[in-house]
Every structure is written in C-alpha cells, then in structure tokens.
Length: 362
Length: 114
Image 1 (cartoon, rainbow over the protein chains, first blue to last red):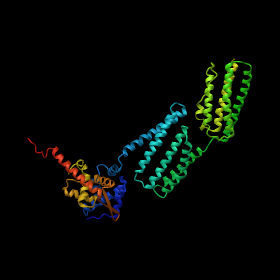
Image 2: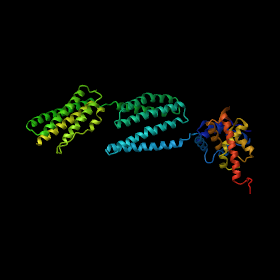
Image 3: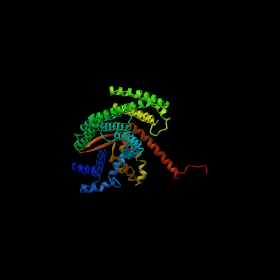
Image 4: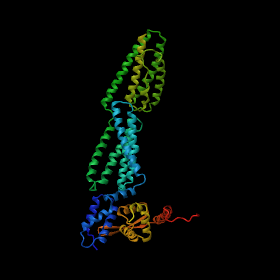
C-alpha cells in the first residue's frame, strides 16, 4: 500500500485551492478522501502524479469547483438568493435614482426631489440593511462581521442624514455629523486595527483606511462649514439697506396719503402699518438675539396678518400690486437669523411699494 | 450503476442510515461501504457526498470528530440526537415511497375484487 507523503499532501492541497476549493472544512474532507483513494487503490509501482490526474476527474463533471458551489448552495440560508436579487435591484435603483436626481436638480427640472428621496431610500433603507444581513451570514469571523456591520450601519446613518439635509427635514445635522464623526474616529480605527496584522489584508486595509479617513475628513469639514463671516456681514448690510429703503418709501407714502381722502387708501395704509409693526418687532428681536429660537409663533402671527393684508390688496385691480407670498414663512423657524430678517425686510419692502403704487396711481 | 439522478434524492437517507448502522465514519469510508454493500450498484460521488455531509452538519444532524494524520485531517461523522430521529423519519419515508412506487409502476399489483 502506497503512503501519501507530506509533500504530496501539500501538492494536493495547493491544487485543490487552485481549482477553487476555498472552504477549509471541505478541502480537508476532499484531501483525506483523495489520500484514501491513493493509498487504497494505487499500485506500488504507479506514479503518484499520474495516478492523481487519473483519479481527480471522478470528483466532478466539469470542474472541481462544482463541489464548492454545491456545498455553498446547501449551506446558504433559504432566502439567500432572493436577498441577493433584492440587493442587486436596490443597488441599481439607487444608482439610477441618485444620478437622475442629481441631473434633474442641477438642471432645475421637476421631480428631482422625488428621485433623490427614492435614491436615498433604496440606498440607506434597502441596500445597506440587506448588505448587513448578508454579511452577518457570511463565513467571515465574528469580529469581521461586527466591524463590517458597524461600518454599513454608520454609512446608513450618514446617507439618511444627507437625504434629510437635501430635503430640509429636521434632524439632518445630528444624523450627518454624528454619523461622520463616529465613522471617521471610531469605525476607521477599529477597521484598521482589526485587520492590519493579517498579511493578506495588510495592503488593502492600509489603502482603504486612508481613503475612508480622507472621505470622512472631507465630509466632516464640509458639514462644519457654516457660511462665512464675510457672507454674514454682507447679508446684514443688505438687510439694513432694504430696511432703510422701505422706511423712505413709507415716508413718501405718508406724504401722498395726506394729500388724498380715498377710503381704500386709508384701509390699505392701516393694514400695511399693522403688518409692518409685526415684522419690525420680530426683526428687532432677531437682531438683538440672533440665536432666538421658537419663532414659529411669530411666523404664524405674521402669516395671519399677511392673509388679512392680501385680502385687502386683492380688491385692487393693478398688475403691479402683488399679494405677499406665504411660502418663505413655511420654513421660517428652521432658517438662520439673517435669512429670517431678510424674509421680513423683503415683505416690508414689498408692502411699502404696493402702497406707494396705489397712492401714486390715484 | 444507477444514474446520479436516482441517487440524488435518496443520498441524505443513505448517509444518515449508514451512520446509524455503523456509528462514526469518514467520507471515503461511507462511499466505500455503500459501494461494497450494493456490489457497486450505488456509487456515491465525491461531488454529491461532501456537500450533503456539510449541509447535514450545518443543520445539526451530524457531529464531527477530527483526527490528525500527519499533515492531513480526517473527519469522522456521527449522528447527533437529532440526526438519529431524522434518520428514522427519512428511512420510513423512503420505505413508504418505494412501496408507493412499486404500486404505481404496477410491479406488485394489489389484490383486487375482480
């Protein structure tokens, strides 16, 4: 009976690996099986390599990797294939929707918001969770699985945050910044230290770590770029200018009003003054304390006044006199102080001009 | 030798029953034993045997005992408690199936009133 030597064992192992048997347990089984065949069936004077080549085709129909695939198929859980299909589908949909959304957004075509939301939805709530679920069922070690799952989870948080930011939904900042900080400063180090000691992963780990740190760093600094001091100052001075212009128009309106006894003019003046007082009050409060929160009550009050104002204005037949748009006030509470003041001063200016237009047309 | 199509559906039952009858066995041993018992009529191919063994093990039907032989490892498979039950169920099922097939293919006509 021939005895399989250690070199021959190494040879068989290497050949099995080369032929696609990567599952270690399976490789051990097949190796022992092959050795048994050789030891039991090979005649003393036969050549090991020739006999090996002769026996091997018994193991498969077309190639040895069949056994590995068949084992994989049997070991996978039930929903594996449908999950893979979903993964592919949601991946493709994510790419299509986000690319189309980006294009539509830059071109200002309708439907951009919808596409971006769908793209973000498929990515963060279908694609990434599926990826986590599939990764958890993988053959990788528990640590690897946990590390990857954490990474995908943080990616999910960041993607959802980005989506919220794009859609101006509340909570975006905390999601984005929280996700990015934990990704860059917690996940990346964990990823690096859990992998760099393994020689086969070392290079890829180093490259990926650098890439992820760079991306995380860029994201982090981008999120922290609120608009610059220069921009803020120019906003302020513009707001002031608009306000002063409005005051001049008001002064002119007072003079014109004194010269007429049109009853509608008086009514317009009254509602204008009423609304202006409210606007002035809120604007002053904001100038005094730019961090003033909870301005939604003010916005509601202003909206009511605008509705009364618009009702009066609508009786005038003049194309140049326009009703005040309520839309900017819908998001009022979420805006920055200077932007809030800009909205208020714009309305102030508009109603001043409206009154002026009416008075000068008399 | 029977076609692999025929063997495929019964392989799990064969493997479980072999282990039930003979205690712990390794892969090559199972294949050889089956071949020997059936006069070479049933030859389990490596491509079918090992995927089946691995899936049975994953489902908790089999236990593994490793024996190191120099550089290689021999894995002895044996039935777990659950495996014992499954083996019994599978054998009963197959017996029933064989009887049904006999009847269906008219090899053993039942006594009728005619």
